[in-house]
Length: 580
Ligand SMILES: [Zn+2]
Image (tube, rainbow, N blue to C red; front, side, top):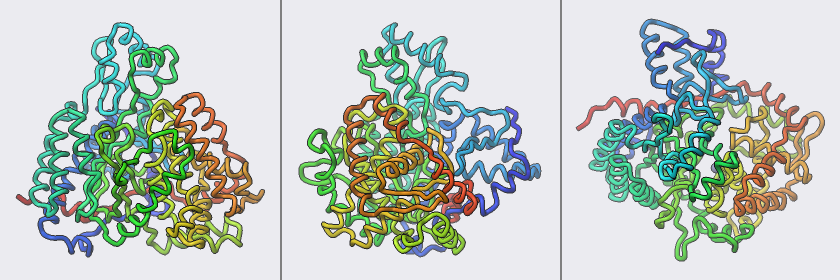
């Protein structure tokens, strides 16, 4: 297929300039973390990086039918000396695909004439929502419930078959690539020095050789137990991006037929791979919170009315590690307005949680670090422009980390049933819940000794300041929509105030109670699993006010940043290494 570059030379130069495209640096070739590893672990990493890059290639195909073709086109044009292609490739590598929203919620399209489809690479390019629904209704009326169930499943790609649709498990769809990934994982498992890690790698390899979800569940279950391993490797499977599958819940006739046939609707996964080295000191800090998880669970609203995700009679089945990153490939490494700071997996839709598997939280050191003087200066400039002067002493960018820890643990608390029914609002509500857990537990956690009073105050003010956005997000940006909802809610409740000229005041003493109030409302919605109630809650609170816009305008002036990219010099070197 022939492509045309979409952005002008001027636009490309701007968007690839360092002020507009920030760089997050993964471990470098001479890092002490890598040097400290045993030879076997160093060798294993070389295979894990190779495996991660194949996962990235697979994910590009899930993301768009045109990504691989466009990538090839860019590479060919660069060989011919095409300067625009060279700059476009920088953006393509950063956002890991043709389409991405930037920090100001503009859709960036790198190939001219291509349109972003709701079905991404997961559904036929020409399938519109109405036809999608009509076909499913017809198939259900013809008693093809089993086929429909496969179509509305997280691990399939959907194609046309005559006048119908057919689902193909992605392990079958990308068979050769997954076979290669499995081969690399097995090779890594022969070299790495940790027995448990190697067992996980073998289980994950096995899950890539046969399209059987229970095999993924075995791998996930083992992965979630990994606490004391030198290396980190994760296959990330999350379904924030698929906006097509969940539309079926909005069609009353189809929804009724799905209910009648007991078909759960599960959005489709994007795939990523993370390679890194576990950081002992950082992990010890994160693990401190583990002792407090039962206290947090006890203080969840309506906690007697649902089963806690991490509830376990004897032990909290959750591990946590802080990781020095070598490579973030595929979904987990895509810079699309932002990039993931931490992940708590597997998500609730995964089979491993039903066979006694727990969860594992992984925190990304190289993503959270603010290192350059330039970035530190920007933080000060931001405070000077948007935060009431008397509150500056409470702002501490390092306090974002304990908030993130509260957020990730928040995902492990609350109801696990009912959330899927919230359709396109599911992720927004879940992300909102995680934030409100982080905030609303602060009094209890500081009383119990996890945080000092001063730390608590800093966490609150830092959260509120960082929650101010540069632009109104679109409804598809779950992580940002929830920030707007919180700002609106907290403004209504008088926990925060924004002056006419755009200065934020945080009433520290009201924040925790307000968060608990919001958390209670959210948990109720998740428990009830009622689409309309979820929709109403989001729309009632997703209100971009004039004062938010005043702050946003100031933020846009201070930070030109439109997106970011990752740099992974050690991974690039390991990728080239030939070992046998
Ligand atoms: Zn989250």
